[in-house]
Image 1 (cartoon, rainbow, N blue to C red):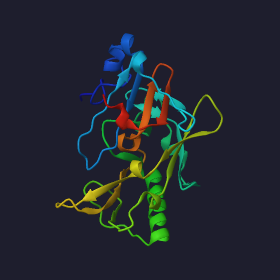
Image 2: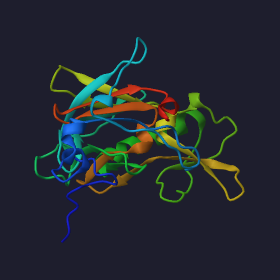
Image 3: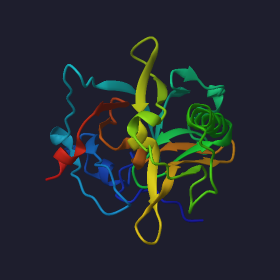
Image 4: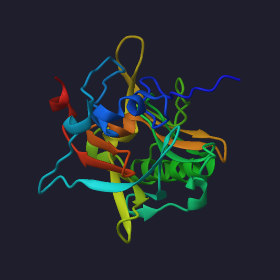
Length: 249
């Protein structure tokens, strides 16, 4: 059996044969990227930075947050829970635990593909909370799933930002007590779907289930408009809300 010891489209794992590791004298184990929103799955572009050029910064309204990270074939993050509109979901955090040397389960970050995937014991409570939000608040019911999506809704005339739930990922850090939150809004969770004539057909959630206890992975659609900084040597991942269109060069 062949094993991809480089890992990923661009080879950015921390494995010895990866691009990041082979150029460690230049990269210093540091990566920064900022992914612009993708509309209608058309191509977009941005810049990735390495080494001393990889920097992250915030301001009074955009706080840089740093969480713990373990590196191997993939980058593992310590996710402790998920909330929807400030209500904690009934998810056993053990589904996100990582055992060193066994990367068949846990919660990881990856930018190579768009859909975030969650093990079903975490995905099902999230799906139920989203369905309840739209049903109780607006009387909207799911429609048949489209393409690779699992949860979809038909188009509604009052389709706006204020009618969508806020999902928060709660992480742990070795450096401080308590949790560090990543707030996901409409642009991170839902995508508009069009018919063959370019008319809005509805919207779908860009999170899909995988069987327990498979890997849960935070992927690129949920990372848009965040500056993401990997400090592999110090096992830290930092993020900050950012207009990623400004990162194109």
